[in-house]
Length: 189
Image 1: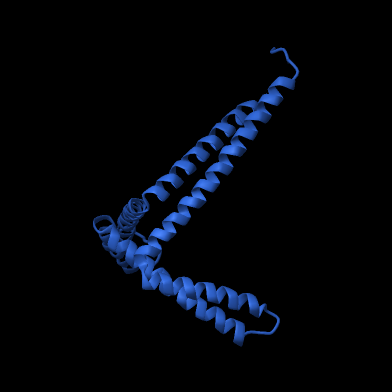
Image 2 (image 1 turned 120 degrees about the vertical axis):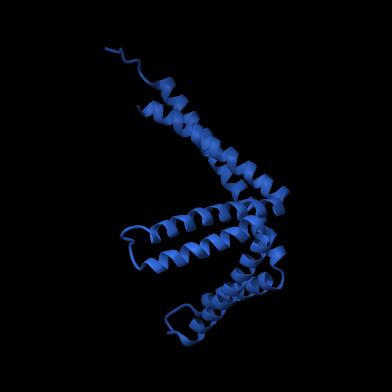
């Protein structure tokens, strides 16, 4: 049983590594197309989620108020429509919203640093606040480039994890072969 698991484990790890590397290369070579694909996939997910929420709202005994499920479902379907049929606009809008969130987060980090208790690390809060503010302003000022930048970072991270999974898979394979080579022969019976 252990040998079967190891045999499957290294193959799965290597496959995950290859997929991660391929995804990373695709994201780096075609970041615009990757953004569109992400948004369309997210739109499909939002559509399915919206239909599910609407169905839950019309069910016999929904968990919670019926109108909340119907409202959330309708909102999901509308968002899905924009994501599927206008992915560039949706990506830009989401990046802009992320930028606003980062600005608010940065300002709250500054407030925590200067209004909070002395026991907290003010320097760390200020540093985090600066990073959040700078990223937020960059995202709001140019959401298209920010979306491409996020995609490039995702691509690099995917490639890095792909290499890690590939190496770990090959190490597990090597360990399995070593176990197979040194295992005593046990007669079946």
